[in-house]
Image (tube, rainbow, N blue to C red; front, side, top):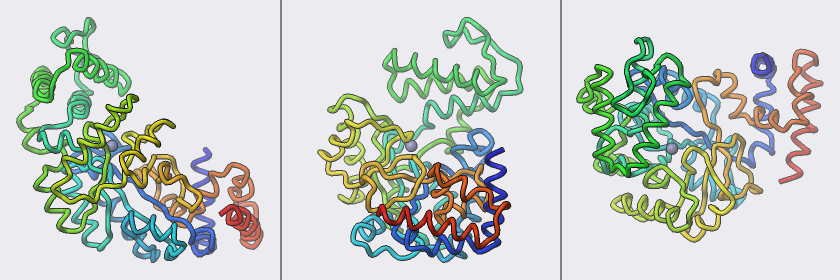
Length: 371
Ligand SMILES: [Zn+2]
């Protein structure tokens, strides 16, 4: 309901020129919006995980909105430097992709290139060096593919009950157990891949076809080098996509990640928390590893006041309509998240354009005063 109301309000504000007014405000011009994407779907990944994968047409539409709205899409490092120096161009945006999947190479990069937009890829490297499908993802994907099939025995995989594939939660339970068992048995990458292959066979899925399609695989080192040559900025996301709560193990994740990326040069100084998970103790460990910025998945715009190791980002998914996406670009959606402002801005239908603008002016001025 709230989402529906918000969408309707955004539409009114867009048509009445309020979007443009906020986008051009000093408040917005002193901020950088960092966009976060995970994957662009090549086959049917967006139907399996709509929160992670976006159809290429929707991604292209997003870039078109950026271009038509005259947003300044900056490389991440440059955006952060210019923000600190107070020289950010108006309507600044940076685009980031998490994980560095093969779909980035094949589906996302050609679209970005056609618009000439710079991009940062936060590359996790274990499955980039080891070219097999990411274990937990491929198990989940194969179970989803068989979601309309009747339950089948799970004995071979240590389940006492038949495998119920009909709901997302029952499939998630199965994947969780497979991961925990694999960890408990200390399986290495090849052994986990064997297990995924056995699961495929059990589900009557051709695993060799999944592997050769490169779905749910990461870019290999050659592809990374090729894109680095095309000015894609590769940054850190841990080696094994995890953040252990032990300092040595945590820092080893960064060091192994860096080591794998060394052939691309010594430019990896930005970090992104896997799955957006962070804890206070991580910040000191990141500083020790000479990390200058770290991004979360907490929605918001970056200002000079933002902690450089806890930068907000907008995780953009197909669940956002085009107008909601644009409301984020202008900064209006971020103002709405500041709770006490929402009642003033949201009921756009109740007020005249000039009333809303005058409310907004006070809101923007109040936020701008804070820095
Ligand atoms: Zn990730």
